[in-house]
Length: 595
Image (cartoon, rainbow, N blue to C red; front, side, top):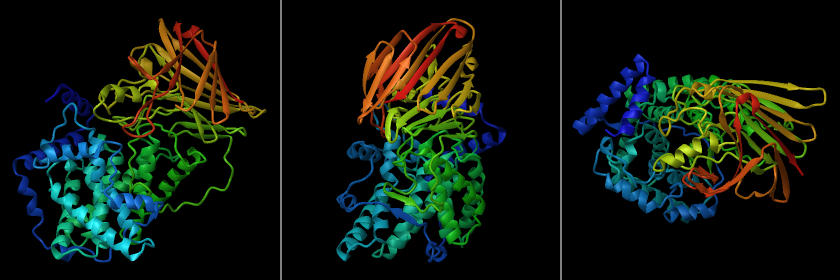
């Protein structure tokens, strides 16, 4: 076992309850059985699946924005690979295709495992299957039928059950189940052997997911993905005892996680906007499936999911994009260009100048000039591991209408580039203050954080309509750096924003204030004035610091990088203002004005 793997298990065990330890031990024994007796699973599959499969199952309703050009590309063999070389991903899968998934190991130089898994979600086939219900001509219809059938069974042949990397994650298995069910219902030229093979595949995936659920400290979007797969496999095989068990387990977890992962103000417990969109879409798929097939009353879940949709509607920009807060792996609940029907009323009222989301920890300020500021004063992430959160407390993002100026630099990738993974999660990669070069919390692994900080926040509005939001966190104190960071945002009616950073504590420290610019923003520096230009819009930052650096694509230490999509990075400009001294003697005052 590598030191890295040992640390991972140590940190997990350190945060585990007795019930979780029992769950982990059962999973360990399950994997041991798979490794020593891989044919053991066959005892679950001794009955005729065709006889217990529900013939008239209603699949969730899907909206499509796919173009004919995309359909053509998919018919010509395109898959979704998160920007990686498809041959590289396939080579890795082929390398391990004869090995049990418990034996698959990643080595230095191997592709990011998230990228390996992406094409195996088979969402390219889901788009083609969904297009069959659209108004396509007879020739295209038949082309799609044969293309999906050929590629689906080719995938199954290349990835036999329990072998290769695509069975390592129960989440990935859960996300494939809707594709298999859609194929079973929509493919018209299946032989009896192929129908049986597809039913067997769905049953096997449901069985594996049910035995490897993400529970306790692993609760998160993985759990919701797995639950969706369970209820759909359970709904298909509801005439069997195992199908009924899968249904009950999936429904119970969905009900439980609905109010755990979607906070009371509609925001994300995982502190990731991209995963929040992903989770909400998974819930819509589950709600429609359970409701349309009269399997469960989903009114409680639907009410909570609607609250989450309200949060999304308020946070997203005019072009409907979301700020890049927290981890983002560019994943889709259904597929690119496809989304579930969302039963929510449209928002007709104009946006308010100030909105607060106290449970998730965000404030949103807008003015008539189009300046839009998102203030993050939330906790690190979903306890106890805070997997998908970034050390971005008291950070801001600023845009003018749909034009980004001050950004969250994104995620880049999860595996294969540890230094970059640490950087994009770090405090110095966000628009806040970094003390002594440290993060607000300690990164233990590429996902796991040490304990989260505490955050306090207050808001007030004076008679002239000026909004003031004050927040502070104690992250550095928890790491034995005696400094508390306090930040106030003062938003004037005329559109200027003043940011005041001050500190309490003791000792002599270095304070680095960062502002990360979108790569398309041009910057000019004149003493402590910074003039930003993009799309004929100008923004001015004035910082009361003598030392202001412009960092661009720096390697050592990393600074000035931006990742718009998973696995892709480019150089950008980071403004860095540095001061040194005792906390009570240090303050930054930054004024932001839009021309």
